[in-house]
Length: 341
Image (cartoon, rainbow, N blue to C red; front, side, top):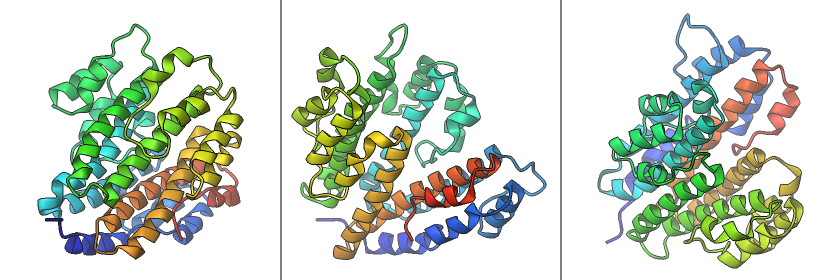
């Protein structure tokens, strides 16, 4: 019997009223400085510590704590659907582990590694903090293995002298794909959860193909494709990766996504950074889920939508915090927001 999502959707709708919309964020973008931003975020209910120094890292932490509380509330009310809801948390954990690995390889500070990450019930703030303080990928892997986190073995089996970042990220994505497809299919082989996971796998393959498109990497391609997607099959992946440059690869991927709202995003992928591409993709996926939630309000789509809106809010607020701290042009800050109206 399919799970009943009515009560959890109602909880998600209630929580969603506290997520900032584009208009709210645009107003924040025009504030003069960080103290003004801190005061407004505090008024909006974010856990800003009184009398603490107003720094980008402190505001980023408050935003992440607010998002963590949101997800904990969803988890608390999930009941018998906790196994299915775990797919959403697994997606966030995958992103967090990937960012922490990247930060370790780049010798970034712990604060920089944590910026923009979304704590979950399975990797809460304290766990992310401990992982961010580790000097090497091997140390991160050892801790995850000790915690019986599924991404620990994925990292522990890769021990080259100079770890390959793309190879590590693909291994993390492959672990997510295997686990999440299995969980999603328990809710229906043709359901929205399977579609969501398949689309996530498609997108990760697309990002990998773009990253490879300017390299002579033919021998590596079989090891860097993640099975389980629907649109970016192995043939599309290899065609894009071998396209010769990022513009040609973007055209291949745009053609593959024809009929979806992602086609135009990938068509322009060569003109933006990989980080901006992922932000645009997130905004586009939120639009897709809003339409699906309207068509199927009683399924799990509203909960999926709620989680992606939380991620967008965290990324938008991080964008504003650091932009205001650097005194970036305010119209440009407001124009780059991805949260929906």
